[in-house]
Length: 64
Image 1: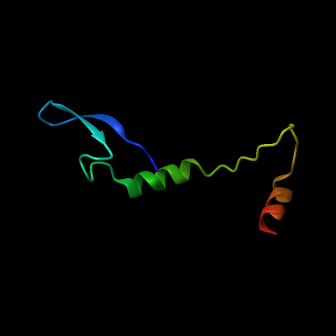
Image 2 (image 1 turned 180 degrees about the vertical axis):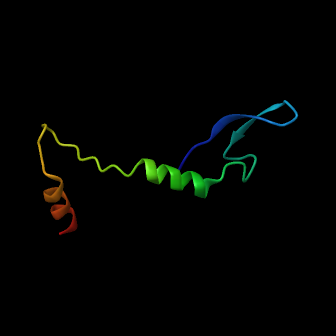
């Protein structure tokens, strides 16, 4: 889960720290999670040594 610790500038000019314990609903987590999902849709495969593998071969292994 995401951990929050952000300074938020309020309309009256004050600055309030937004943490997991405060300001419920200040961050739209469903929208944020969708944006993170879209930006993290890259599949990364880590190996001990550098190898070259064709995308179709990787998908065949993952789906089988």
